[in-house]
Length: 550
Ligand code: ADP
Ligand code: MG
Image 1 (cartoon, rainbow, N blue to C red):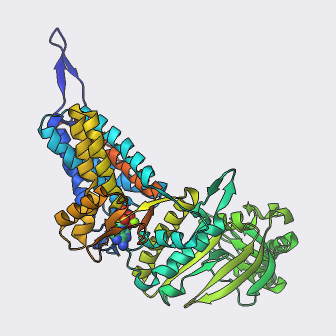
Image 2: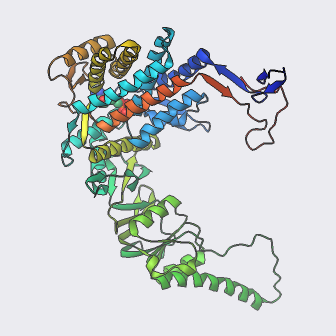
């Protein structure tokens, strides 16, 4: 139905397009809250080291098994706009700090649940939103109050941070090995800029190869290109190699039209072939003239060109991924050239060593000792493809938290310690604020306790008992880091026992959860336009009164 209103003279005015649906007030709010909470419920059981995994099967039948919040939400197709906002939180969390995605989503979902109870008591959403904002600010103060400063050369602590982040991943006995590699890699790429340390983990290349075991995962001082040398006659190894990067083909382009060439005389045939060969020879000559020892080509390399290059002792790799070309450019200082005529000595990059090595069944090219030492690669190995994927997710989390701590050297106790302290401080603060906002701040305090509660539930423990223990431990002097050991069910100092997380992960989780819960609470009207018929790009413009909307 189209929405109509009338002017003073009774003339109808069409406000919304035919087929638009509208959902307002309480109904809209409840729908949104419900949809967002469903996402939180899905992720809840995966939280913490004893969380369960999800098996995700995509439309092609490919299976992913993981308990990584961001990975789960990436795979599932979410329709509802409010649910999509929850997916956005996990993405933001992942992009900003690389860990704490499940925490952020579960917290946002709980904030909405508590908000719903207050909405039932006729508390206006704007009060909730302002109460939540104040509570989030206060929570961040608490995080910083109990934060512990780390010396970034304190390898032991970095290791604990990395191990905490991957404790829920199915990498078992190899966790230490992966964590050590993560620390080495991040330290290598970290650089001082002004008075700040910057550790951009985009400079760490992750290459996965099935075969061998997780313990065979290794750090490479350079770049790995998952390609082999194209011709058996070419060298397999070169020290102090000059590198050319070419993003056009080393082939003669076939004409688009079908052309017919009539040859009556065998000598003409020979001339024709010679002509083609000499064009290919010219290509090889141009590369030789530039002084390159190896050419990485983003497109194909003709057999004849391979042959000529091999004769000159020049190596070549073909169909190299664009992203690898960019990494090679950054690491070796080479310029990616499109037109072979432009290839000059100054466009070449440098690497101390280029070598083809056999990894498992395949050969790969290792470009090491590069000009820019701030690029490293991690070669991830595991017996099964699914294990390799999970190891990659674990490695990404470990790299993220280590770089978080190197950039911002503060940590807090995990296992629910920081959340219980936040809840305690918020309850005190709420009484000072008073009024209706007090209720919102108390709701926030209850909501953050969902983290220790869920950790306990996932560990098969009695959540109520655990909460009581944790709260009383935090009332005592020096109890601000008391957290749950999910394996024993006992409460102990999380910092002492090495369950530690970067401050930025916790801060970001609070911020993004509070922001998105508030955003969802502020919506009181959902207006949905009807999708044009024939889908996007189609002719569109359905008939009036067409079907399709809810
Ligand atoms: P997220 O996606 O939010 O990082 P995780 O599944 O990685 O979710 O779980 C993180 C939570 O697990 C944090 O609250 C962290 O403190 C907690 N945690 C990690 N290791 C332990 C441990 N050994 N004991 C108790 N809690 C832990
Ligand atoms: Mg985590």
